[in-house]
Structures are given as structure tokens and as C-alpha cells.
Image (cartoon, rainbow, N blue to C red; front, side):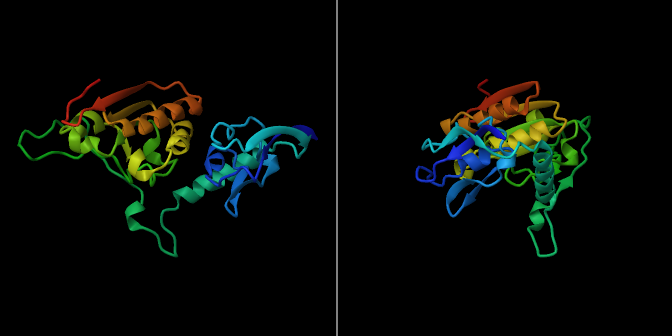
Amino acid sequence: MVRKIIHIDEEKCNGCGLCASACHEGAIDMVNGKAKLVRENFCDGFGDCLPGCPTGAISFEEREAPEYDESAVKKAQEEKKMEEMKHEHPAGGCPGSRMMQFTHSDEAPAPAVVGKSVSRLAQWPCQIKLVPTQAPFFDGAKLLIAADCTAYAYANMHEDFMRGKVTIIGCPKLDDIDYTEKLTAIIRDNDIQSVTIVRMEVPCCGGLQRAAQNALQASGKFIPWQVVTISRDGRILD
């Protein structure tokens, strides 16, 4: 059939991989350092990959191509999710990435004794890069997306923000990654009740906020959310 499909100009492609990350259907792979449309039946023709291309290597064209196969796409996406859930395997793997869920009483008051704080971390892992996109602890969760530094700048992070929430953390500057795709999958594929974004006042933390806001929009869900900014001296600015 003749239909609209993307075209990748390999001469313009600089191999950044942004389009492959932006393609939720998995139609694009990186082959020999270049983006390539390897699964034409996975391309829906909507062009989510276009805005992410810094060199303008991607465009639309109308030509003979296999029909978009939504069922095959969903099957591939499920297989990918299952792979992400496998933190341990016979060949090895990092024990520190093994999923764990902790039980805390949200009704329990904070200890009155100075220096005896209670952890409000509800699960492990907590790094955005390590956490799976689907997990039991996300079911019905209030999600806290926090910049790494906030826990050190804001003294009462556990009680004021982490208590009763599933916490995932990251640093867009040090990780040098766009969290949008991962956060979109977490919000879209789980029963998330609310999203709280806690960031530092420094400009680089804006990347975390943008990724979370873009993920909320891309998820197609209407979920209550808020942004809290922490100053470098540990105050809540907004």
C-alpha cells in the first residue's frame, strides 16, 4: 500500500540517536552509527522522531510500504518491558539493581529524638536510569521525581516530600540523558495518582522539570502535578 512514512537521509544523519529514542514504536535502530528505519511496519507515520533531529535528516514521504502493524508494535513493546524487568540473570548482573519494596507506616510520627530520622524511601532502585518502567510499587503510587541534590540541600526531604510516595531521582547534568521517554513509560503504563517534581534552583535542573512535564503530556493522562524548587541554602522557593 502507498502511505506516509518517514525517510532518513543518512548523509545528514550525525548518529546522535535522538530519533531512535523518540520513536516509541521502535521502528528506528542505530546501524553502523547511523539512524535507519529497520521496521517499516512499526512506523505509524505520525513523525514523533522529526522534532528530535538536530540536522533535519528526517522527513516524510509517500511511497509503497507495509501497513502499520499496531499489534506487532505492542508485542515488541511488551517484550522490551519484560527485558527491563530482568535485573538479575544467570550470566550475572548488578545486585544493587534488584527490585525491592519497603513497608513504612505513613501514620507513624517522625521521631522526637534528634538525629533519629526514619527513612521514607518506599522502594529500590530509586535512580531513574535503573528503575523499571513497570513495577508493583508504581500501582496507585504518588510519584516523586526529585533531583539528586535536593535530598542534601533540603533537610526534611523524607518527611516533607518522600513520605507516602514512590521516589525516583536523577541529575540531568551528570547523567547527560533526556529522561522524557523513561518517565513517559512510567506514567503511561502504571496507575500513577499524582506527580510531584522537586528540583534545585540551578538552571541545569530545568532539564528534569521539562522531562517530567513532557512525559505528563506525552502519557495522555490528566494527573495532578506540582513543581517545588529548592534553593541552594535549603529553602523552598515555590
